[in-house]
Amino acid sequence: MRKLLVTTALMLILSLGMPLRAEVFEGKVYPANNRDYRNLLLPRLREAKKSVYMIMFLASYYPDYKETSPTNLFLEELIKAHARGVKVEVILDQSDSNYDSHSATENFRTALYLSGNGITTYFDSPEKTTHAKLIVIDGKTVVIGSANWSYSAMSRNNETTVIIESPELAAYYTGYFEDLKKSCGSAVHPTDR
Image 1 (cartoon, rainbow, N blue to C red):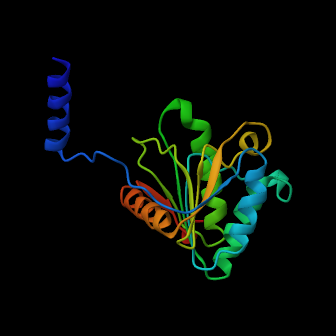
Image 2: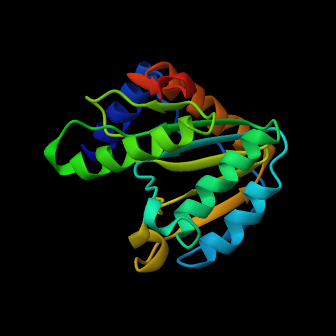
């Protein structure tokens, strides 16, 4: 009986066209947990030459802590990269649930700050929660993990992140970024200020 159930399940999966295994990518992996995130991300943003694509559930800009907040430093590096001619695109969450109202407010403030510095920021559809924390740099570096760009994530929380040097994985996640961007509900453009 058990063999019949397994066989039936396998046939169902195959008939639906679902893959039996995930794709495998090779590359160098660097753990960037907790406070290491800042030290490992900043130089990569500073060295960006072609593109930076970012998807973030929460990205906070702290105007009262312009030069001391790690997230402000990250945002400044995005702005400097854009000024160097690097293509910088950002997607942020804007969930319409009450639970996420804090992040939506923070993300809108950040989008206004970025757009004031020439960077268009896209918002996901309000019906979706985009909980991803992803950065793709120059088509070769992927930063992915649990860390939001917030005071708590950068200063207090235990966060796990990896930085992966893999052009194949970067291409995969650039495609993911582009697919998500197509479904975005709105954007804040530099001319919207």
